Length: 337
Image 1 (cartoon, helix red, strand yellow):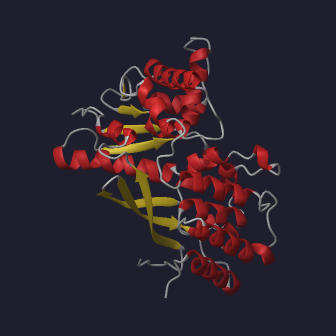
Image 2 (image 1 turned 90 degrees about the horizontal axis):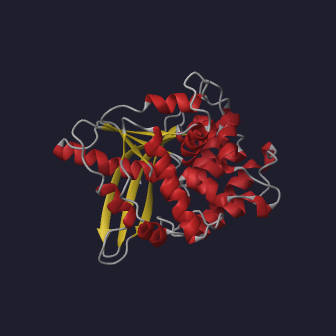
Image 3 (image 1 turned 180 degrees about the horizontal axis):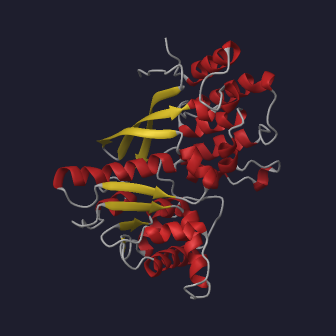
């Protein structure tokens, strides 16, 4: 791994790997679903929606049809996406829903929820195409129910519950920060999680008072009330959207079919600000027997993720803060030489 550190802005290039389980002899249902999205010559942009956006759509559709009635900002923005030829994708939200182990649903309820979501999207978007219509079957839903697309899904849940138990809902004193970072990195390593994975970096961002990270994590004093699946689903949007976008854009590059661009839409300001700190610059895949290993190269904006060490302009505050940041890099295994 070779990384370059920009001392002024604290941008850091890191590589992570995530293994996706693929049933022997066939492609995973989620991957097959992406590859089955019908190409459309005149649909250059595919918009992925998150669970929050779809919830807003369903709430909006229940209201009065009065066209003069005011609408919330998110709905106004979603209306702007409804363009002929563009595509709207449910896939990111779908994976979050079916892999949520903290909110168990009966088979009947899960199938009904997914069907209702897609129907609501089709009702709302009258010009853009909802690509999952007819592609997500009850059999597929039940096949994927409770399964985490990434091999380490259950381990990520265990890691997040550990971090929640560290008491980070009360912002730690400066003298305790590096010890907490060391504990977080040690726990990740013991579980087989790469220390530079976004789930680890987001946890460390909470130690350094990055409010959007707190907003995504939603730590609870009562461990029984902490929703690890919700936090994990949000963080893994970084990789999931990048993975599917890469597949779609590869089709466009090779055949000039499908979509020239992809976009991710969320009305969750905390999630949006967190995702803005991670820019995936390259995605590669390697298939070996029943496993697909997906490699991500991304640029991480530590100046924003570690705000107590930086000025609003992104500069390190001083020598002590620079030493502390370097120690964080060392613990993460991404320190420059």
